[in-house]
Image 1 (cartoon, one colour):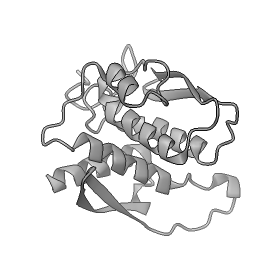
Image 2: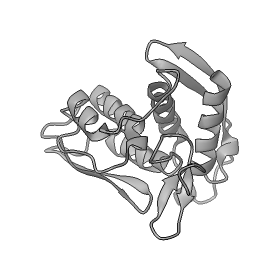
Image 3: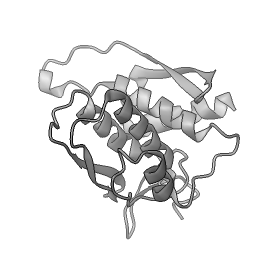
Image 4: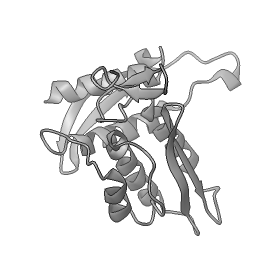
Length: 191
């Protein structure tokens, strides 16, 4: 199973990092009480001439992907819950103050995101305004009395980016699919 998890992590990163995946490698999988956690190694990149062209920090992206896959593979045969929005609202009531409007395949990504947000400490007045799919990727809208909380923007952006590499129907690696309605889907759910 370790090879399958490593392959999933590699496939998701290849889509999400769009040609920059060579700067991150999957080095293994550790068995933990929270599920199998993927280990990553980052290769130093050359400094860009223009600081505005610097690539996004992949550390947050890799940590969230590792947590997502740990939750997904906590059981030997992962199946996304059909009532994902109900499960998320029950498990993380302080994060999901409204129901999510996404397919079940992003359940583990949203659960991992909620765990990280809770660990960071929710700012006063935190409220999820809307969680939905738009143009084949996740959108997470939130508000708080003090929304300048360090790390919140980075982790939410990482979740939104990762959704572009995760099938929204089943949680396996996916990619952007067009033709009528845009979606992120694996080969099986692209049909």
